[in-house]
Length: 100
Figure 1: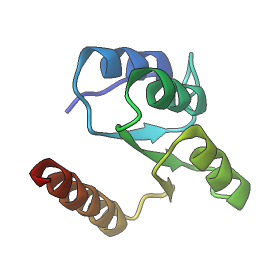
Figure 2: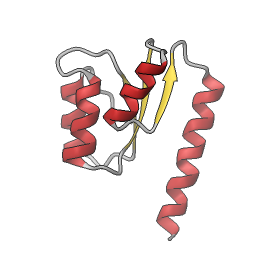
Figure 3: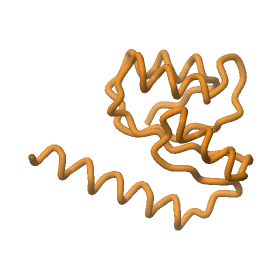
């Protein structure tokens, strides 16, 4: 598990490590995570799945997350059971891709 304290650190970690899944708080300092997600998906590795985690829960925020390249959108406060389901779904899909 890797932890970034801001969007720039998230981009740096994505460059330095093989990452399959990222949980991104969409309101972080320096490089905001909307921008960081776009940079990770467009410039580093489009296969990295990004789950947006944010207090902004409006439909327009969900659309903004999707436009940035987020695979899923979870509004705060996080439902741990839902987060577990989302991660389990990702792991199942990821394992199927590795088998093929």
